[in-house]
Length: 202
Image (cartoon, rainbow, N blue to C red; front, top):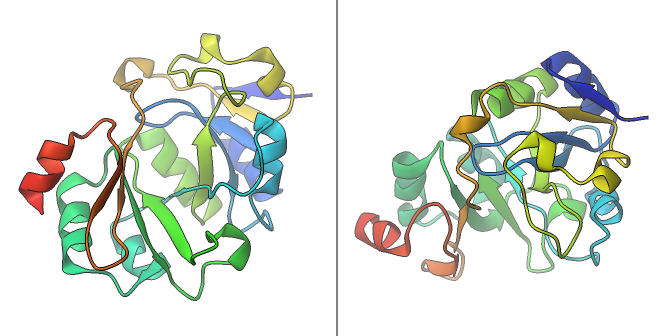
């Protein structure tokens, strides 16, 4: 049975036990697992009824995590993180050796983002590892920024669901995704940060 909670503790315990959980971010509600406790993201594909194989980005707790979980980073990506983290920017970088193979893409990359949401950051600190996270919706359905809009079918499949006390701060817009591999910056998805702002910074 899914526990609906207004406190971090229940969610942190469920994540530490390797179970998928729903929690808020600065963009939309996410469903994820603690990287330190789950062997890989496969359970998230089952929860979302999504085809396996699409990489799952990590939510991290600090700008320093870019250097920890990425390697061979071009200077431009470090500048982007300094400018837009915490915030709605996901950067795809070459995964460092400490990133488990199960979380890397076929080409050895990982998506990283530091969210601008104190509840999410507190969860990451409490669990002690990044959270492999995707939007909290059944595949093909809309992502949501309000707890009341979460799909009952999805709620039934997770260990815990954490309600954000300040939902008014959720943008409701997915993060912008930039591929920082291959020697340059490639715009993958425009979201909460415009490509124009990214280009101006880089």
